[in-house]
Length: 123
Image (tube, rainbow, N blue to C red):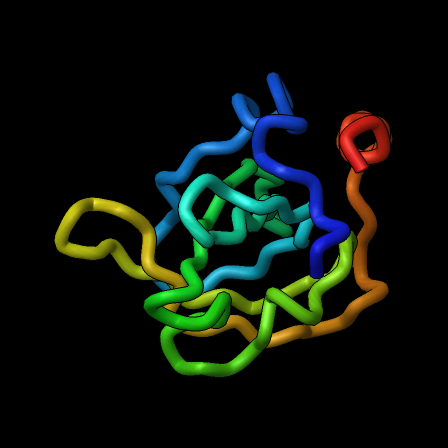
């Protein structure tokens, strides 16, 4: 768990990702994760169909680093390249809520070379 990089080490890499995720059910590849500022984990996903890049923040004090359904534990599990079926919604503040995450196939797809290179440099 503590081997995750901090968000400050990601630098410009974070600019490739938006917090404005699509609402609904969609497939995504986990590109990486990092500690945030406020007892949160930042999850970096690429949409499996469009390759658009999204960031979702999970907090300790609300969900213990899990989706709202209490399912997948991103604090302890989830590796780069794992593919998930995600259900997301928009919360009252306009931020993305991760409703559920189901691991589809941990070997289905790996990040592209540029993403791997950037992630390797911050790990």
